Amino acid sequence: MGYIIETTSLSKQYGHETVVNQVNLKVQPGTIYGLLGENGAGKTTLMKMLTTLALPTQGAIKLFGTTLERNSDLMSEVGAMIETPVFYSSLSAEENLMIHCRYKKVPLSDMKEYLEMLGIYKHRDKKVKQFSLGMKQRLGLARSLIGNPRLLILDEPINGLDPSGIKEIRELLIRLKKERGTTILLSSHILNEIEHCADTIGFMHKGVLCKEKGIGELQDAEIRLYEIKIKHLDLHVEKLKKVFEVVNIYHQTVVVSAAGLTATEAIKRLIENEIEMIEMKALTESLEDYYMTMIAERKEGEAI
Ligand SMILES: Nc1ncnc2c1ncn2[C@@H]1O[C@H](COP(=O)(O)OP(=O)(O)OP(=O)(O)O)[C@@H](O)[C@H]1O
Image (cartoon, rainbow, N blue to C red; front, side):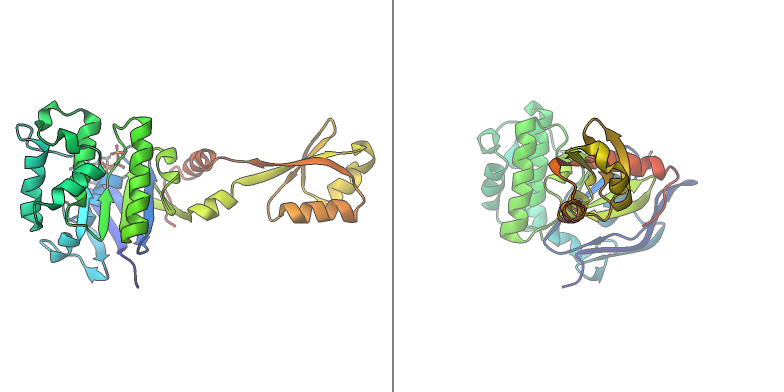
């Protein structure tokens, strides 16, 4: 099957400012794609274009392999929560969802499942104006799930939730992907919020999708150095420098670059050179460091 979302050179300009710049986004079916970027990176604008809430200045969007046009029927297959969800505040949670069920042409009986799924069934009769930010966020998510959409587009879905709520929503998204095959595009400006559920992370900076990485690839890329404690280090310094890219030497320890070097290969080189090791540690760079470095390196933004 082709991509669920595919954009080609997608751009949006407000006045003279290009806030989404030549974005080529590709989201595979049944995956969770996390769009990560600082405030103002263009995430919301990109999502608005994907849900026909904003018109592109340039470029094309395909959803489920079909070109997206205004008033497209494709939107019936999409559930979305863009920016802070808005409700009729004098109506109850359930009444708000009823309106959405009618709009989506799905039976009212569907509401219960989603209110339960988001843990707010017991609050269904409460007026939305009495809801906390986190409860509104849950209600917004419940509304986006009505009609069991094939594609969910969620702008900062974790915003306003407490730590246990964050975990719960992450698990819910993973469950929707696994059990229903739902494809999910979500955004955040906090890496930690999405790295535990996304399969792919797209780094957005100043309107540009700078880099796209599979989560496995990011985790593999985490090991930067090996710290190896060596017996009689003084005797082996020259040899170590020949067989490794040595970054630092202190006490009994040598720090070597892990670029292109697996732990097995490092150990093999030590054995072949008769260098006795006491212990070896892989030093990692967190995804957060990776993200910050990437942003610093791409001040003006550069497309992938
Ligand atoms: N309707 C609009 N008119 C003019 N400028 C806009 C409009 N909407 C957004 N912008 C500008 O576009 C840029 C990108 O905004 P956007 O909301 O897409 O970013 P974001 O990545 O979602 O940020 P955040 O994490 O703060 O929500 C910002 O500079 C913003 O001021």
